[in-house]
Length: 98
Image (cartoon, rainbow, N blue to C red; front, top):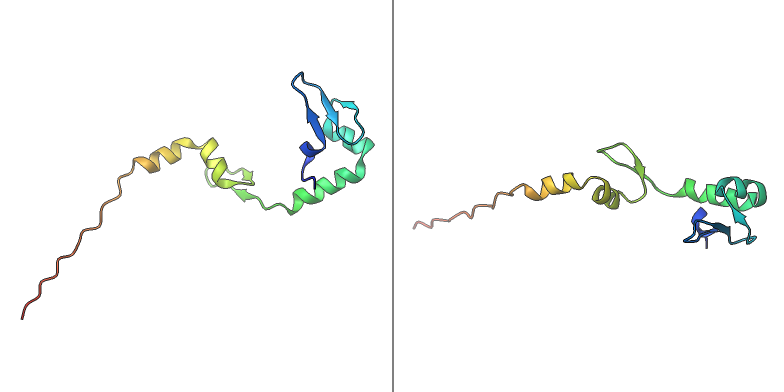
């Protein structure tokens, strides 16, 4: 089951894009899907609307996978958090008096 535009388009190493549906060489994926395959484009748009997206609290972008986004786009935040030294909890000594 196709989920996005890349499932219908083959990107070759030499830069040529080929439509999997009609096997034609294309330049603009969205324009090609609008003209030749409007039903597939509607399907893709509906799928994208249903996907859950999360807002990054650091840059304000809407992303699908927040953890991966932070790891790729904000490594300095992870480095700062890793440098912080967490205080070790002190063990309480109990004194028993009789």
